[in-house]
Length: 181
Image 1 (cartoon, rainbow, N blue to C red):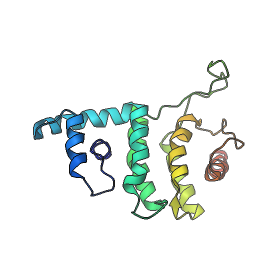
Image 2 (image 1 turned 30 degrees about the vertical axis):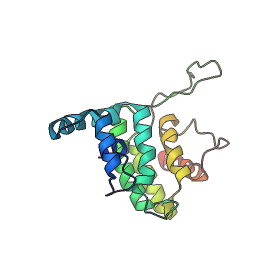
Image 3 (image 1 turned 120 degrees about the vertical axis):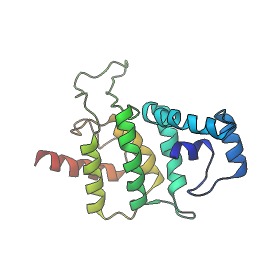
Image 4 (image 1 turned 180 degrees about the horizontal axis):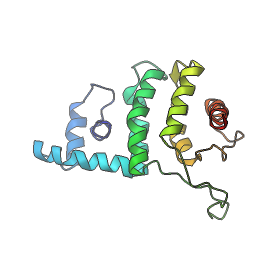
């Protein structure tokens, strides 16, 4: 449904503009209920397998899910949408681990090859619950996509000097403590 909301330019949950509806279905080359039904599995497959498309849907989800007038996404809402998106992207490959590269774009040999999994998602949700956050900022939401794709499963390639949100620094410390225990 999130891919449909993106394609039909729905600005918020439960809000569909006439022009977005018309232009969106036209852009998907759908002119009948039958063609609309046929395009849905393709959108779902693309969302799961295409990292660029996943990122577009993922970033759109922040505004789509955010309450009007709010600057951040309520924590419970963010977790609900992560619970929808992350498993699909991990299963289909859209969130495949990106090995680190050096200045010549050669893959780093110290890379573990194992990236984010359901276990890291579970740790992330536990951390958020323990931290007592009330909301997720746009910056944290958007950078989380790259974080998931570039961090190895043991967090050994995480650089706290990089420009990640401080929430990620705290999470990595928390997760490393849980992994070693």
